Image (cartoon, rainbow, N blue to C red; front, side, top):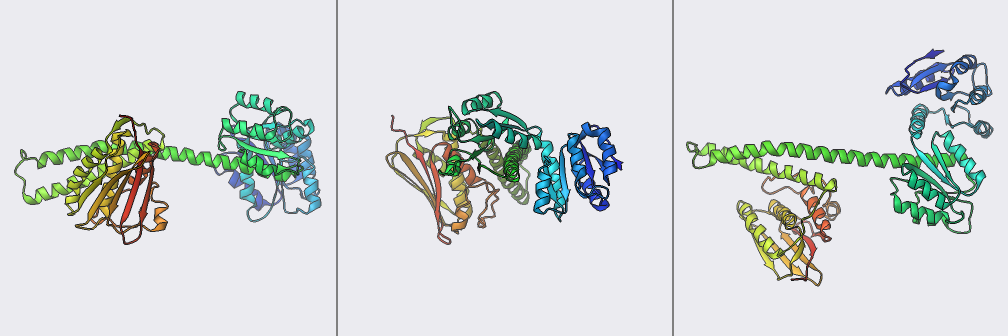
Length: 492
């Protein structure tokens, strides 16, 4: 019998007569220093260890066919001592399955090509379950007892409620509850009403709700799901089905939370990097401007050309850094708008005048056709940023000597702006994903301009923050029209 001791880690007892399997399970369980492992290769060794350490074992992994105990005696012995157990077996006909489940085990794992990773994942799942609270709402004492037993075998913390109102009070007192098992037929408040009430208090990522019912005469599965439940089970159900549904829903919830957490961390990282890059880029740009100023003098034409190239490159870098900062603000939910009433037509004329300076380098002329419109209520600085992004894109992808047209029209409730270019156009497939982060269409800027694929995503978020709409109309080879609308203010 072997034993690897570390008081910081839960003890896993593995009883297995195959040394190859024993070695591999031990290796995977200890690979990340999560667990300490005790091992036995027969029933006699296992009994010696259990008698001495029963209260210390987190989970026992038990082969039911051992050289000195071929009928699962090791499982019975472990359960008598109160050791939580997972059966690891190569034989699982129906008789064996029923016998195993009758012994109040956590689960069974069949020995196949994926058995060891599945077994290790199951043990890790149990460790995480210890920190998860589950609410069981059912007026049947016997059913609550059955569900409580199943959940406690999976090492969840269990709270019980006899009716819907009691369940709501428990959730209000324990907002860290992550899973609710909700029966349909309960006094005072039925399961559908309880589900709707719980869902108003928490999202499907914060709280998993599984509806249950013995009633078959109504489409309760659909009603529960439409009320906000994540899943539904018809009574009676097999223990394995219940456990699988519970664990799969909890796993999904955790994965979504992890993705959101990683996305938040990525956004924060982008913001920090962009912020730290902006200072040195501004410094480089300032020094270049100083060298190019008339007062510096003494520069040859070649030197001035090189400095012009540096200035253009730093300008492009600064634009990308600013886009990254904007995206970090948008993703963090901190896109605050400074609302005022302003003349959208005047704003467009001013942005066109500024962008025509950049357009002139490609012999592009931006023209306007603007109708009179009431003032727009919004953040003028953010709207200007949005117009600049659309004009910059039009310049970037339009060929030498092309025209770009900006129009402004209005209807009863909104102002409608269109930026038309004569670029390569955008396929229908690319149009579907155009306003997402870091998306590029495959079109090549005609002047080798740089881009990180964030401008249109920023446009979308600014428009939506103003309760407007943005979309594109385009065909390959026929340019593109970028549309956006903003609500108008009729008050003078």
